[in-house]
Length: 168
View 1 (tube, rainbow, N blue to C red):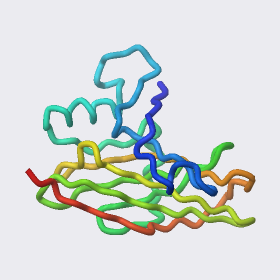
View 2 (cartoon, rainbow, N blue to C red):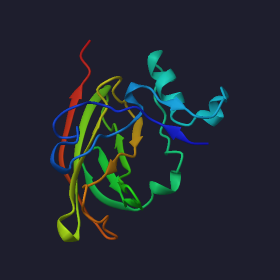
View 3 (cartoon, rainbow, N blue to C red):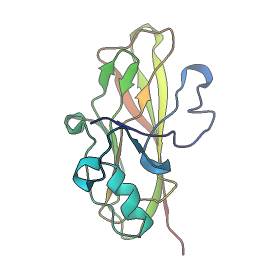
């Protein structure tokens, strides 16, 4: 089954300006291309429906769970795994795991660089529902740099992590 996610947040960093791209993820609600309502088959869709009711969001991997295996960068509650090369760019698996005691909202900025001038930024944001204590938010934005070849061995760095606890 294929899951497709809507764009997260539009900002100059990710809106396609000068070699950047739009990050995608579950914060605005995924659309599912398969006609199944069985939660076991919906993967990340469970995250959105549970969050609406305030239930803790349980750690999950993406539908391509193998992408979340080899850590290449880590900072605070954010972990970036080895990118996966595609014809359109690099899928950059990012996982945010809330190690605090309160629900929190995160923004994680990642820079991906390679030979021949490849440079792209991706942003993962949990600004819609946040991440509950002990929960995680896996996401796979695609980094691309139009006109540049997709590198086989990119350098990945986390450039910024922000965490803001939920205030009631």
